[in-house]
Length: 275
Image (cartoon, rainbow, N blue to C red; front, side):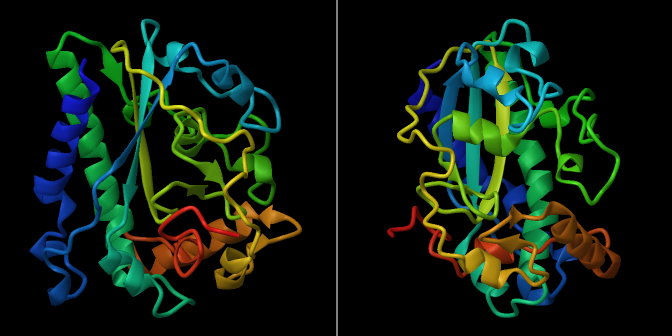
């Protein structure tokens, strides 16, 4: 499949689809009706032959419960990864009160997730129409967030899954991890990730980095922003503290939730930071 045509079609879909704009009937404030959620996506690609997927199975990275692309789809040849950057409207709103998520961010998290699912389905449809097989692990019934390592929420190993969008984006050349465990791309960290595994063959995007945290300058801005001090230079991100705070936002805004303070007002919000 021609990569340029594929990307052009996807960019147009993200721009035009109604799912990228907050519906009037669900807007948390009247002025948020019609708010755009995502800007133009970044694309990454990685071959299913890449040995990095076997690395992800190692304990301390993800673990043996991680399913490689061919475990999901036996005839898979490529993994397509997309970074969907949040619009300036969403980002700016979430910088105003650093103790609680903005309404705009809550919409981006939930209505944005619905759009992510829609984009995944659209990619699968495009590929299947060309005669290729395709699936999104996030939409597959085999996807699991249950840790096979521990059932204790206060342990880091509790926060794992058998497919990681950020690790796959790292493999696909989109960026490296930061102190907050966000992935730093050339368009920054403020956004979301999706991926599709397919029998279509795409040239891999070169990983222009050799270290997992190469783009992070360890400035500590994300740690200062965190309302519950779940990030530190010494320990990185403490997942259970972050999760407990997000649960509180869900109690107040159900079905919405979120935080995202580590993704805004930081040097890596829009780009790879310059030390």
